Amino acid sequence: MYKNRFKEIDELKAKIDGFRPLSADVLKQIREYYKIGLTYTSNALEGNTLDLAETKVVLEDGLTISGKPLKDHLEAVGHAHAYDKLFELSKKDFISEDDIKTLHKLFYSKIDLQNAGVYRENPVIVTGADIDFPLPSEIEGKKQEFIAKLPQIKQNSHPVEYAAMVHVLFVNIHPFIDGNGRVARLLMNLALLQSGYNITSIPPVVRADYIRALQASNKNDYEPFVNFISEMVFEAQKEYIRIIERLQ
View 1 (tube, rainbow, N blue to C red):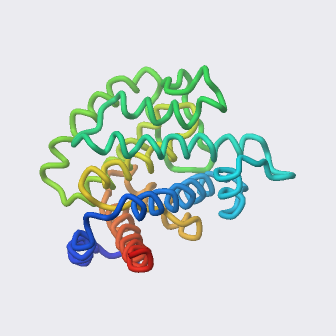
View 2 (view 1 turned 180 degrees about the horizontal axis):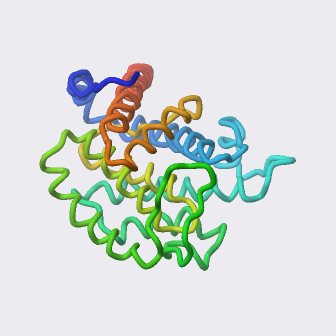
């Protein structure tokens, strides 16, 4: 269903680079636009009930939405804080353990400060899913292995493949009590930004395809997930170009 779009992505990347450098005003507008979009989509994938418009109100106006759970509001605010941090971290060309913990802490501290940025101490139980996450005693070793692998994967992969692998390898460790999917998508976008790509969201409408691709990766079949992410990046690039053309 999902194709490898690296060739088309490279072509659009060249077109996007032709617009650069963007003015400070345009860059600010784009970053704020994607803050709302990425926060909405990433939270919605995990069951957050705030829609796009409600997420915008929460982030821009600081208001609460009547009838919506407090946790949904805190997830929106926390994700937005973590999103802002991406642009500072993107000035580096690598991803560290501290980066991972920082992003989780920013996202999760208003929800559960005690567990924000702290690896879980209990096993993950997933009912009805063919997923085998590491036990708490295995997290430290898996995490070190993950961090150690990244430079070689980056060197030997297309930047979009690298970003996809950052996401999938991290989420399969599932080191935190909650928020692993959101941190995985933040890390994927950090990897994209570090390689000069734009923010990429995964729309809730393709959630079933996203989950199926993730489940395939649990059996070391990464191609479906890499192809899926390449399609998401390709679509995000087309949107990014439309936005720049309107703002120029």
